[in-house]
Amino acid sequence: MERLKVLVTRRWPEAIEAKLHARYDVTLNESDVPMSPGALRDAMLNHDAVLPTVTDTLTPEALNVPNARCKILANYGVGYSHICESSAKAQGLVVTNTPDVLSDCTADIAMTLLLMVARRAGDGERELRSGGWSGWRPTHMVGRKVSGKTLGIVGFGRIGQEMARRAHFGFGMKILVQNRSQVDASILAQTNATQVDSLDSLLPECDFVSLHCPGGAANRHLINADRLALMKPTAYLINTARGEIVDEHALIQALSFETIGGAALDVFDGEPRIAPALLDCDNLVMLPHLGSASLETREAMGERVLANLEDFFAGQTPRDRVI
Ligand code: DGY
Image (cartoon, rainbow, N blue to C red):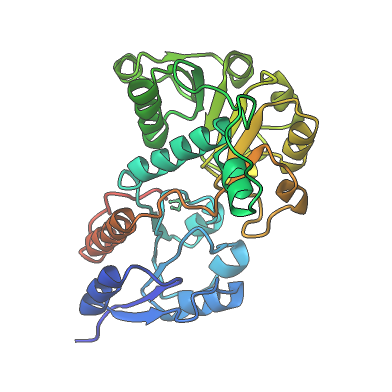
């Protein structure tokens, strides 16, 4: 019997690629560079499933393919704002994602960034590696204390809640939450968190603000110049969600004029291109989109894709269907 054809747009952990090969006729993108819209169109025409990830921009051009063989985009990752929802719907495509399994590691990276920026870990490492450290002194690289401070969490889904747990139980932080919908009182109670009415009322209250909301057009530049101006001059902004949520031009201004204490970013607008002015900001820590980058998590994400495909090809609704 002819095997189902699946195309994987980037290289995946070896163990998961092996499982895919055992079940399907797999096309791998051996070069591991993002595919062009044209190549993605061809993939849609010739495969039963396309397995994209955050680096693929599934625009109307890539998705509006008459007579496409592909009926499912089984995304490797939780965020899917890189997939044009209206085109996917118009094409009758099922779209799935990989939630839950990356919440721990993404929250770990958010906490890592929070600690790094407050305690000047990036600065310190740069100084030491450049041979510039002249020794201990009371005024050397003094940062800000984390324990007991107030953390504002924007978007209280699974990752936001994991972040709250780390901050509250690990560092005794007070948790404030802003979320589109009302969060269940029992969930807030787990970290003694308080939900506030609006982002504008959250920002002035926080020593740290960590973003965990979805990206996409609806949240583009949610953190703009006006909102940055609402933050305390000593507060830090952490973004492990999506680059487009923060207006980077406004952030560069805030960092350069020190109207906020600092920022720490794992994601960038238009990544992997980085706005050159960000590189000049010493009160900024940057990581190359490492949120889910542990072997355990990356394999678990692959398992989740495999399970979604299995459901779909068995005629069932995949558990992680998002479109
Ligand atoms: C996601 O899953 O959306 C991440 O950004 C990649 O892990």
